[in-house]
Image (tube, rainbow, N blue to C red; front, side, top):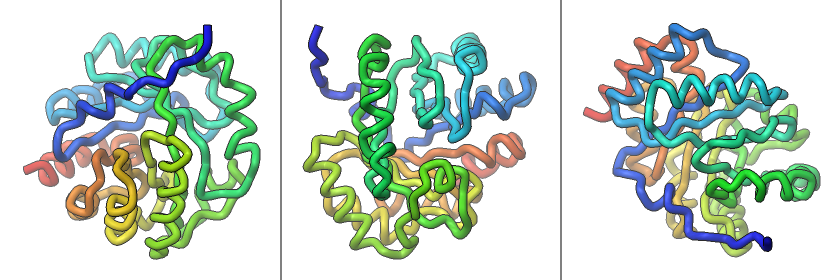
Length: 246
């Protein structure tokens, strides 16, 4: 059966001040995972993302997905790296193209290799323009993709990159400073991208305090993604988000 692109229902249902929780199958313990998922329910998390830049074996991803499903009804989206096993049973999958880089494997190569498998997942597929911004130091995403990020303050280049992605039919732009970034995606970059494209913009990487989260929302981010903060200190995650949402 030919693949038919559909309107992405998940992208249309996000509330104001939407946030997502990024979970890494290689970095969780049962107790703290359930704390994070409880916080997600308490504070209106819109999306649970499962993904990592390193290799995920299908067993690890499937176990994490099962645990998430047993604890919350929040939609689960796979945020795959190049060597990640595809997960049946998620609500959606970000079909990523690294449009900020010039490595053909990450622009289209990996996508060709997995396209048939992706269609067989029978889940919502979200064509996503993935834009890596400089987060202050080299992150795993930069190393794995063998590409250079866009300069953190080059809002014009980020906006033009996003526009090119939108013209190619991508339905989501994901601006990312990378896991563990010391510099989050800058406000002027988010504003410039939002002014140039009419697709949702998700922002992740380096969001560790309520001020940076508020700035991202005020700049126009449709959804912000929290990863490392939750892994390192779930209680601080609760306090930070409660303050940002308040």
